[in-house]
Length: 453
Image (cartoon, rainbow, N blue to C red; front, side):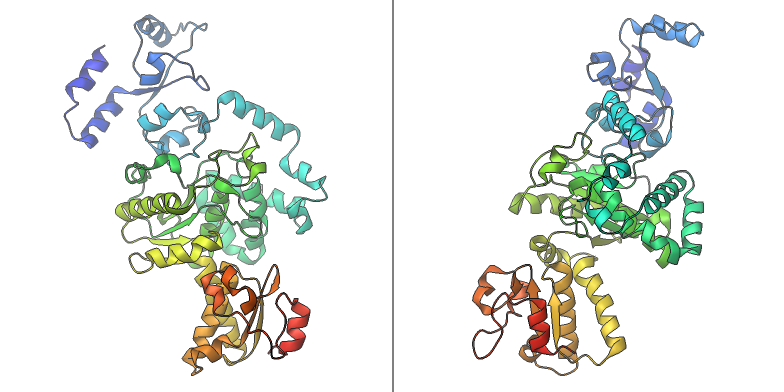
């Protein structure tokens, strides 16, 4: 009662001052995994019958038959770093709000009982053991080995306890460890992100957070962020729609930036925008920590991304935003939407293209004929940059575009189906007739016809 009176007395103070009052008075967490607590548990206030129990507890004679509240004097990230207080995704929505944890955990709330079942399942039969027995597993087919997974898990264990040591080891052994920290091993990490979730890293924004993203951004402890890598999980590597599990790609990419490019680990922020997933297998997985709904589309999707960009720019106005692994139909649209307003770029469209162009420049003059397999964001980004390079060297735009033969999953793209492809691809559709290749020609036919340089 005294605590409640003091809180009411200080209700008119500024928010920062109220936080200090709450810290001084102490706040409580409901008991782990209990979703059906009464008013005492959900509000953080002591019930009328709790006084005697607490008094006996502090006198060293707790009543073991009754659940006792845990006192917490921290807010935000420190709560998740305290092993005696943290209960991961079992924090109730009311607790996440009260302890400033929104955005620091995936959207789905998982009870302690569910977490226990997941731990036992992984303990008795690891995710890799299951995958190794499945001949159709994508990562097994890609050549991933148990040793890759062992190394990844070991390094991530170090990172969770001692980031300084983790980055020192990776920096000193980058050539050896790059394939473990990032591709191809990060693909497995994304596929199993929810199943392997241990320590929350980065920020998780979701469609449920609409209207609150600016305040959620302030739950991140650092006032200084130089680079943000964000994904919506819609097209992760070659694995397709992984929803919230795509967070693994944002984390892995920034691990590379710290180890290879010299970014400070305290000034980078991996993020995911969870708008649902169209992956039915993922939605049926009980361990999945993202929103269990189909993806938002159209204006509704764009509104969520708009609010995310506005929120992080309000919190960190000088930070670079890197869009990572967004599906093709939104990748170019989002880049054009923000590129002239904010410091941002799309890694698939611009990053891959810049690397490919550097390789072309290093090997030959930027004039020649190219057969390009893949009309997605990365493939068309490379084509557009190569085309610009040709124009810079004096080639007229139409002539430069005429040096490319683009193949997608249905083969060579010609004017016969130019109306069905993305705008960025339409310019490069090959003419029909006059001895030209037929629509849908394969790469062997195209390479033979073009005599690529």
